[in-house]
Amino acid sequence: MTDESVKKPQSTSDKLPGVVSVFTLGLGAIAVYTWREGMRKKTMIGFLVLSLLVIFGAWFLTAFLQTGGAQVDTELDTKLVKDICVTAISIFGVLITIFISASVVPGEVENRIIYTVLSKPVRRFQYLMGKFLGVQLIIIINLALMGGLFFVNLYIQEGILPTLLLWTIFLTYFEFLIVSAFTFAIGCAASSAVLPVIGGLFIYITGNLTEYLGDVARRAGQTEAFLDVAIGWLATGLYNVLPNLQNFSLRNQLLYLQPNDPPADAMIPQMVVYGLLYAAAGYVIGYIIFRRKEL
Amino acid sequence: MTQETLNEEPAAETQPLGEARTPDPDGRIPVIETYGLTKTYETKTEDVHALRDLNLTVYQGEIFGYLGPNGSGKTTTIKLLLGLIFPTDGSMAIMDSESIGSIHVRRNIGYLPEGAYYPDFLKGEEVLRFYGKLYGLRGRALERRIDEVLEMVGMTGARRRLVGGYSKGMRQRIGLAQAMISDPQILILDEPTTGLDPIARKEIRDVLVKLRDEGKTLLISSHELLEVEMICDRVGILHNGMLQTIGALDDLLVQRDITLEVEVPSESAVHELSRFGIISEDMVDGKALLRVPANVSLYEAIEQCQHNNVSLLSVRPRRETLEELFVRVVGAAEENKEINQV
Image 1 (cartoon, rainbow over the protein chains, first blue to last red):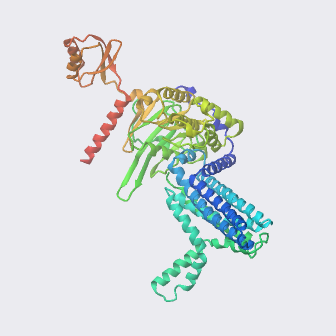
Image 2: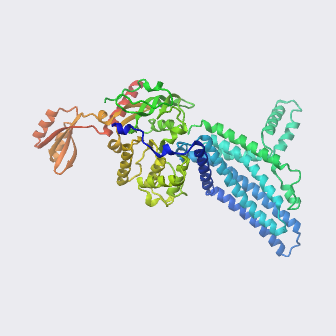
Image 3: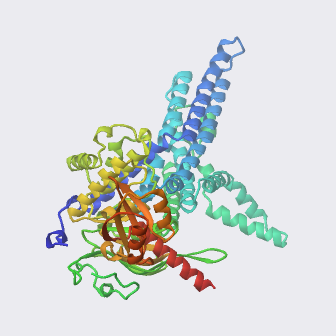
């Protein structure tokens, strides 16, 4: 080997920008890539198309009722449309949230893209943050599409801008954010998407039953039997740890109030903080799991 | 230079962090070093030793062939070097840093994993743009670099096609391009020529040699021993998680056998010679090459040729091929393992 060959040559890597720039550029690239990839997933497209069909179908249903010569009760029709659409957004929205959040990390381990990404100057924190932001982009776009169609539907029916629907969609996003963060955290530990999907469904269902858990916690322990006490402890633990997703629901207000009424008794800023704190906790748990994960 | 001693205590281990490594007595600068690197996976039934006490040094400006049968620990070593998994014991240093996961180190490494997937919905140039951004490249510098690496791997014409429509060879080329996107000092390539046709292999080989000539360091894990023999300066052979041998090809490939160049012999003569262990290897332009193994005396081989009316044209020592070395080393390791088990 000659002396020339051992000289450190100048290369592009010597001229690369600073750490902050690398961090933000990398973060953005991962987030956009995750979004682009996620929007092409067949499961996601399937759920989105179904939800849009249901929302669109509800519109047709009321139009049919009105033109079919039946006794028209406009208020009842509108309630029916609202009920169908809110249910469709909740069910399909949460399914999209869970399936996407569950699959982004295990999917990349499976197809080995993660090796090429994490061998670059990308921190695991940055990688996870990019993936998480990409997932949020997908959830927001889906919610916007579903909510947008519902909004137009309602506006045409009632002739009033349904601002209450916007608040409903806004709070629904924070509900999905919590479900997404914990599903994502489970996905960081799993080698396939199956376990995180189950975990995500568990969080969504129990999160919506938290009030009942509170009741169980209050009632249990009265007989002092072991099983009774154990159930009381479990219910108390779950009640204290799990998020109360019912707090994010404006469903009844949307059904019974005027479309342009402001949300009543809803502490929206507090709910946003509540959602962000739970989401942060979910993300941190995911990072702690992923930080030393062997790939 | 002689075959390097295995498992000796490396002197460089005590070198403080952050200082450039000093050249060894031969003037070589180590860029990848492992010291007693060990990786054990604990399972319910037993411990699986994926890598045991690996002491490896790769020097700046060389192509190092990292060889071994499937499951020998090659990919484990690479994953450890890249910080994708964590060692059970031992340590590593890349360039001047023992902090393997550091951004500085990773900025200087390009990695091509075996059988990697690249998103089907992206165009070739978009894949490179994505990976370039992970290095912090952007704007004109990134576009210029994309042009350069696409040119290097012969993919300029296919840059705007979706990766989903690429052949296996094209995917491999785009993989190599993403590994080179930041112009890294070290390239770690896992089976870089897999799936390529002979012409593409030659082109990629030329690229790798050019990179070496520019002062880059290449660690290539491969089963394509002929390719490795053509381009590598040094090789290490791994088996059962242990480094069995390491050194320059010229030192490792011993000249043990003899080649006799003769006029094309009759079939009966070939058959007769084979009874004495003399192997007919190749026939070109009316000449045949006979291999005389080390355990057959040259005197006897020549006598047998004369006896079978085979005209002798020349006698020359025969260098072992890398494939033969590989089989010999792995075979010996297997034998040792069996003896130890008995």
